Image 1 (tube, rainbow, N blue to C red):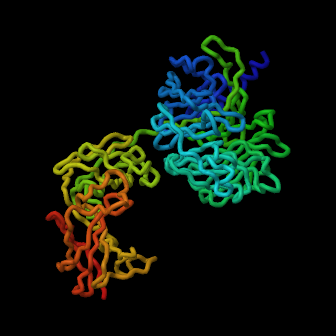
Image 2 (image 1 turned 90 degrees about the horizontal axis):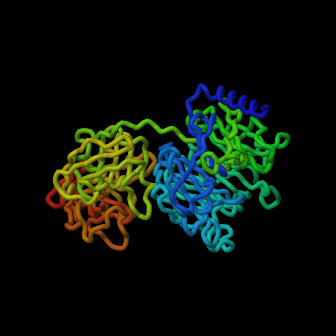
Image 3 (image 1 turned 90 degrees about the vertical axis):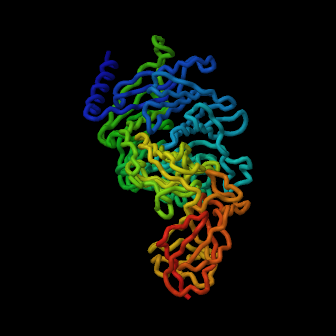
Length: 623
């Protein structure tokens, strides 16, 4: 009776502490499968993941768990050795995928981890053991329906001969704010990918940091700021850094946070608004304790040291993404969770219910391995709207488009963030969707380079000619159809300040009026100079360039007909016009400035297929 009263009192106090805040959903991975709380951890319900697969029957222990950052009702968990589970209704029903040939269960040295992309949430990563060899990273691009290994981590730069087959992964972390960015730790090294695991770059080595890194945490508000935990056994003559490390330049330089009097750190959590840092660490005189820093890790305040009695297990700490003042701590291997609703000043806990193999068959003592706090689903944004006359040539800003050339779209609510395709070109293919934004022209998806609330820049697909429907689709819905005129030709030069054409010499120095760029010395074109004018809309090429990918450099993709160019109505010699290798829809027109052109700013006009480029583009010429 006394124990029940203590538990009731803890629950009562816990409820008082959470009664004035919005309820948060939490999922916990335990030995009896996933548990769920919809009231910020006050009460818990076991989720029974029943599936029609005899290979995935019996007790459904959960080794790791995560939730879709854009949809809190979509949950994933791993059940060793080879089961990957998914629910799209908050855990009421589940589907399962067998990762045949790969073992998903972790061990004490390589605990199981799930990571999910913050934007393309259909991309999920998990650690796995193949039939032979060390751990690898499995990736799904279809929300868990299928999995395949990513490119292996490369051998480290400082000791490549020791890892001829590459480094085995020990931990993975996705950047919570940047799509395609994933960090992997292996053999005390840290690697980074910005293209969803297709290529990897080493950012930490034993030589440069003097540390044995075991895990990495990314500041959700500052993607270049990372925190890393090093092996407590690395303190010594060989490795001079241990405990908690920090970098503010994406991993180029690291510093030990010496203000934290601990060489044994278990976990890190970062509050995205204030930047406050919470850690769980072994501290002299306190044992295992939670600590907090509000100055970037320079100084630390002890918060609580009564989580568990095991100095080797530690706790996982997390900040509630919906309520910044709420912090959670989960003692690994225990059956309880702690919560603070005042930024770590006071703590209370509740016990998880007894584990049940199935409803009515309960009695096992539960133990948890990790947990995830779901971010509340954002309110749907307003639907996008394309402005009147809002679809124009990407260089001239005149109405109309040309297939395989650049297009600018103006409007409202076109995207919820500003982004470009730099991290979204996968396997050499330009993206047709960027942060849930898509554009179709004539029913075909366009290739999206840049998005913002008021503007989108796209490379038009290979569409036909005439009046074609265009739409923009975002998380808020699909815009009204905008009718745009597509033509075979629409030549236009990109412009620098004062309507000067983007022009370079053959060595790519700028042929532009002096003073155009305050930080750059420039020289105007001279009579007789051979220069390159850069534009778009010059029509089909021979041979035809492959759509939706950077133009190959194996051959010259010349325009089907040679354009003419005049400067101040004087014909310039045109050497050729072709697409630029490595780019898309970007044409180079090589000309010679007529020797008869006097000093001044003169109109430049290109003509191809009977269509002239817009007037008003002025080339500066100086002898």
